[in-house]
Image (cartoon, rainbow, N blue to C red):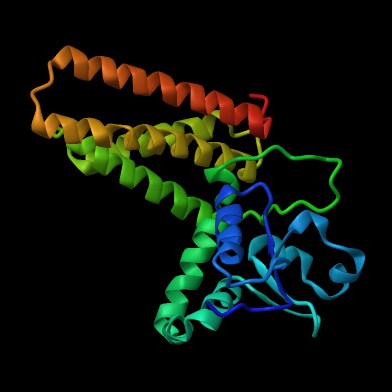
Length: 247
C-alpha cells in the first residue's frame, strides 16, 4: 500500500464514521501517522489558509508542505487514488463525481442528525456543518420512505405509500405543534425523530427473517412491536436531551 505523506485529513471528532474511516486510512498505510487531526485542534497558522467553514461541511485534506487544501469528495479520492489510481480515475468521471458529491453532501449535512452530539461551548472550533434545508428535507423523505418499505413487509396489508404518507402526516403535525421555533430547530427535531423511527424499522428486519422460516404466534409479534415502540420513544427522548431542545 502506497503511503500519502505530509497530508492530514481534518475530521469531525464527534462523528464515529469520520473516526473509523480516517483511522482506517492510517492503519492501512494510505496515510502516515500524522495523517489525521481533529478539526477542533486547528492551530492559528492553519486557520489562516484553511476555509474553516467549508472544512466543517466537507472533510479537508491539508498539504502540510505546500499549505494547500482540498475538500470533500476530492480529498477522499486523492487519498484512495494514491494507492488505487483506478479509483480516482473512475471517481473523476463527470457523472460519477456528480453523484459522489451529492451523496457526500447528503450524508455530511445530516451527520449531526444521524448521530447527534452535545455542543461544548468551551471549544472555540466545533465541526458543525451548516444547516441545509434541501438536504434535510431529502434526508427525512428518504428515511421515512425506507422505513415505510420495511413496515410494509411486516404489515403487508398496508401499502408502502399508505405507511409513507401516514408517517409524513405525523411529521407535519409535529411541525405545526413546533411552529414557534425556527425552521432549523423544527427540521433538526423532525430529522432526529425520523432517524429513531428508521432505527426501529431496522430492528424488524431480523424478526422478518425469522418469521419467513418459522411460524410466530401473533401475540409474540405484537409484543415485539411494542418493545420496538418503547425503544423508539426512549431514543427520541435521548436525542432531545442531547440536542437540548426544551419543548
